[in-house]
Length: 282
Image (cartoon, rainbow, N blue to C red; front, side):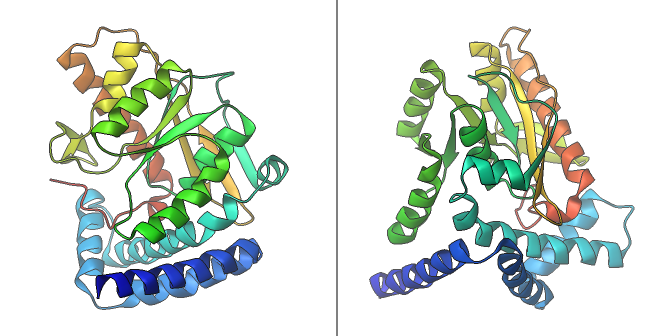
């Protein structure tokens, strides 16, 4: 039964991936709008929990504003997913045409790219690899092996290492950095065994790996966020955080909190483009 379910999921995903790859961007976004708007309007627990999470983080908003962020956020997730097979097919020429960059990328790696599930986060990896320097990234394998391979092959078009979460992934991560390849980290999700921090004024356990790697290996942290815009994308590159301190527990905690503050600031610019559906807060 499970095998049949996985085959059906793969067939559906394969058709969607193939279709989205060849459709114009505005058509892809139109499909995403219809799917996201439908799901966002359903009277389900997920949507109610998302609104409660937004209200908790942004207490000054009224119910209508909270509802609008929840609605638009769901559409943004659908848009990000449906755009994935298309953007990974773009050449450097197309990327330079579609993406407006604000700020400056470092001249070379290795650096640690700090980002979040905000806007079109998948584009950051592809753009960096095609237009600047090699950047590896960490990913979680999909439960369906066939779907996982499909997504992996799409991302592999950036020609940079994809590192699976886990112990073997940790070894590959260190090896990648030694080879001078940069690493991108989505650091906005809750980690049960992370260190205590605050995020939007709430208690939030946060992964400290990016701070540890920065301080121990003296690698700059470069904040990079990609927002959806009307005709394409806006990619914002922040000022690098230089690893000038020793890797003590106190300094690691302080740098982790600073990364949270940077992500929060980026999310506040476009809260409707963040992944509020995730159970971020403790």
